[in-house]
Figure 1: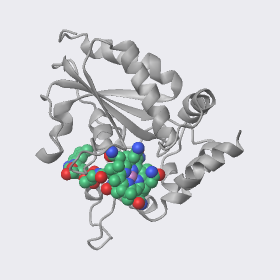
Figure 2 (figure 1 turned 90 degrees about the vertical axis):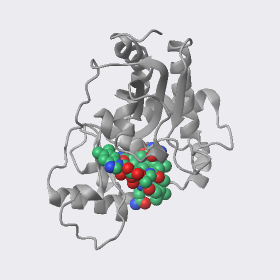
Figure 3 (figure 1 turned 45 degrees about the horizontal axis):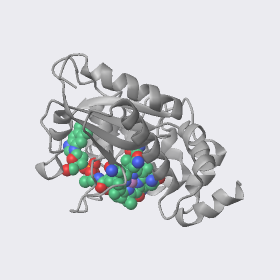
Length: 243
Ligand code: B12
């Protein structure tokens, strides 16, 4: 595809129309927005104006994509079934919509030979405007006395009830000033709530409470919660009990 002002729309529209109905969301970004906040060892090896798209799963993905996927395909060991489903949905959308484009698809669970993640999902979500990434450094006068606290993204509609699944880099699509970087909505603006959020994410993520730091439009269903709170090694057995 030739670089043109229509490039962003002509990528986002077909991708969105395949993936939205399966419970995903897609957000465009420029590689330069991502690389500018990271050290060179974590850069994506593409020019700054290259178009990329970050893919999130919303609570609906479980019922709209995952359960039908299991029904049709069954369980293919040894891969994680949700990862398999996401891979299937994303690669089908990419090959149906962009058979002529070179697309570098990176999943959240993939590692480089250096053992670093293939992309930093939270940084990508933040710079695309999809979900604010609350990091330790976003809290003034920190109460944690030098302890490392992992950061967490919060989505304006789904709070913490979502996941960041993939980054697609459209290697030959260059975008110019028509793609303006949106600021992610700062839905946890106060210091007290940011402390509450980071403590819930780091110390008790299993109780789901960090996900409700803003009132969510939709949360995971009971069945989805049961699935994700089961240890990965026991999930296949759980799926079998669902028939
Ligand atoms: Co985890 N995990 N994880 N995880 N994990 C991910 C972070 C992710 C994104 C996976 C996903 O959605 N598919 C989610 C978080 C979703 C969200 O943010 N809303 C996730 C989750 C949900 C969890 C768990 C709740 C378990 C679960 O349900 N899956 C727990 C909770 C944490 C806990 O233990 N209490 C969990 C646990 C873990 C462990 C196993 C502990 C490790 C280590 C955690 C960590 O390092 N953050 C873990 C990993 C490794 C990951 C993974 C695969 C990579 C994260 C990583 O290594 N980052 C990601 C998926 C992915 O990204 N591919 C999921 C590298 C570090 C160095 O990055 O701290 O962000 P960083 O630092 C960079 C930024 O600060 C950036 O530069 C730094 C690098 O130099 N930067 C930026 C600098 N300045 C600026 C400025 C701005 C503005 C920005 C945007 C960035």
